[in-house]
Amino acid sequence: MPDVDPPRSTATTHAAREHARAQATNIAEFQRTIPASAATTPPDDVPPSSVIWEERIGGGNYSAGVLPRGSRFRLTDTEGDTCVQLLVFNHHQPSERINVADIVKVQWQAYLDEGQLILSDMGRVLLSIESDTAAGHDTFNAISNESYNTNKYQSGHVSGLHPNARDQFAVALTKVGLNRRDIAPAINLFKPVRVADDGSFVWPENPTPTGASITFRAETDVRVVLTVTPHVLDPRPNYTVSPVQVTAWNGPLTEPDDPIRNGSPESLRAFENTENWLLSHTSTTNAINTPEAGR
Image (cartoon, rainbow, N blue to C red):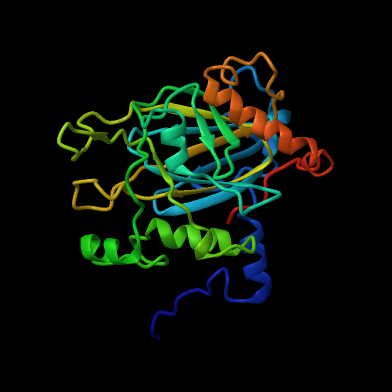
């Protein structure tokens, strides 16, 4: 009599249900912590009950969330080789969004670091950089698209082995009623590209230190969208990018004497613009408590 394989554990509906339910306590390598109060990565001085978003995003993936004013939003390069593309929107007025050109020219600085601002196209502050231990970030270069990744990696489709940043952004934005037209120039975090004297871009020789992080403070309710894909200038032939750890928690609002707010005449004006806008939107901006599901 020929050998017969035993019935699989999912061969019936009841068995499949039991198998699925048995996975309930398993923790995937890349997933959002739900509830957020079960977070394992908050800073030492932040109680887990204050955490509103914890997630580990793997290379080639994306996520998004809404952060309330005053919250802190930390990205950590856990393995020293991540590259995160960042878009930011005013949650209540998504036509207002990150403007990289203004970030650079208003602050007279192209190399982002602690104390600088993520400005919108309306001259207002969306995020401020409260702390930064990374080697630097890139405000100059574009993000990958399907054609670019196909040419370099032989595939670039959003559902393939080498997903591109632009299509990942498009998927994330479609879920909240936005579309490709809402994809503005983004910032490439954790890749300190510099400009040489002749105007050419210089790829960093030294990687970002393992465990380096950047912490933002939300100056109004914002929607942040992240993709984790290789930088377009990365010289390596293989699709190489390590995960990023996301941790966000509730915190106090910016005070009038805050050193970042008063760090320069340009910073103060941007905060005043933001505060003026908030005066007419206090009834809605107090309503955000937790980020939305991003995926």
